[in-house]
Image (cartoon, rainbow over all chains, first blue to last red; front, side):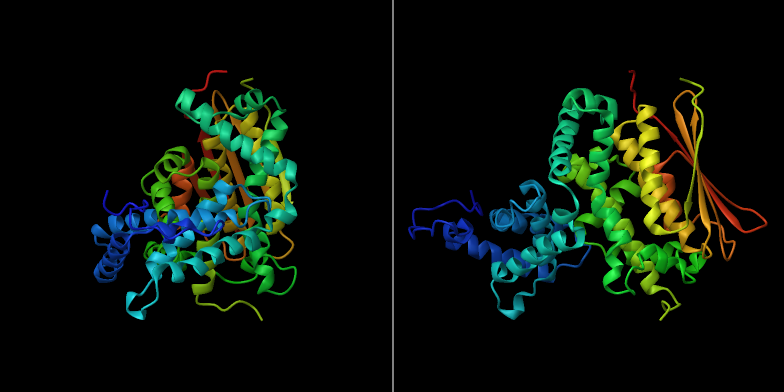
Length: 286
Length: 130
């Protein structure tokens, strides 16, 4: 049971009732293992096959911390499941960005990254403000029903099947699906407002300039765009567009809901488009 | 219902209106009993196509969308919009890769008056027998 963050006989210090139990339960052995892994990661090339295993192990060790941080943001209109996933994305980023030579504890470094990711999640999406509670609940119910029906039939359900299963009109299912996508739609249509002139959405900004699609979009430029995505999103984009896996298959592989995969895909594509424009040879107007 | 009529939609060529296309595509796919996976893919392809079309649309242009049920189990989505430069969609572009992964057929054509037209064909691939 090496590396498991279980309470050993030596871990006698009582935990504060509402603190992340992670660190308190850690044995010296876990800490040593963590340092080994982080040191190993720092020496491996980006495409070294051993990276994934080391990364996974560190992430697994810190999942309780991600879950703890996610719980701090519950009751704000997001499911705990989604928040934990977002925190885990932050955790992955932290693993990739961590520099052992700086002499900071990894958990100290990772916590603000995870909290930042959760806050960005709320800020980017405006979820709590824009989507009524009824739709949030519907979205969660659809997500659950999609998984259940998928288990039974081995394929993703139709709108009619979901409506029958949840005993709501088909229109509600469509509405729920669209609200799940509110994330991606908002990020495309509203996120630029902060930087561009007020009221100008990304698509408008795009329309106003010469994006030289023929050249800018050449295959060679796709790799840096992909590299600009967070690791998990990049992997999901690759699985969908280069390995032709379905969203449900990806969901199963990555361990998130199909709706979450759909959202991450839409967001990633939007981000890559933004990046294309930012990297373009012509500067935005003004 | 193998002779379902086509639906046409004309929106201002501005990002804020793309949501209307998505909603129409969603509802049409549900009518045709597509699975959620397929619907999300088609919506993603439509959004990607719209982004491409809008990126080169002149001010005040409209984007035309036509949704045609394709018996027995398909849907064709045609999107057309005037463009400033009259460029087509290169086959080595990421957008092309994305579209061809999401739907079963993609055709991009530019007319002499510089209207870019993107045709997407999708089928209800997974076995669904209502």
